[in-house]
Image (cartoon, rainbow, N blue to C red; front, side, top):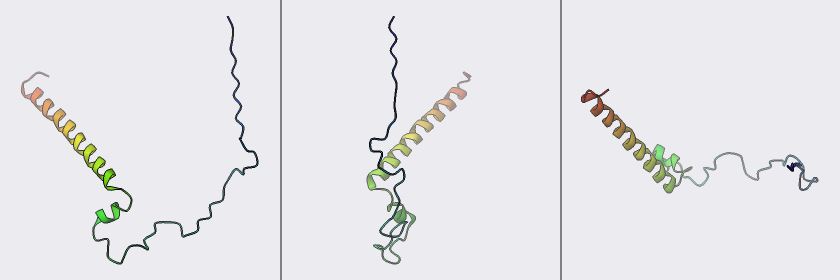
Length: 87
C-alpha cells in the first residue's frame, strides 16, 4: 500500500506587506449624524432604520411570525394531547 504525505506550508504571498495596517480614518470615528436635522428622529424605529434596510426588517418580521406560528402550533398540539389524556 502506498502512503501519501501532504505537507502544508503557510507563507505570506508578499512578505513585504506589514502585519498590521494602521487605521487612519479621514473623518471622525463613529456614526455620522451630520445629514440628520435636529429632531428628525422622533421614534425608536427612525434610529433602527439607520442600521437596517427595509428588506432586513421584512425578514426579521417574516422569521418572527414563522417562529410564533410554529411555537403556537406546538403549544396547541401539546394542550390537545394533554386534554385527551394520552400522556
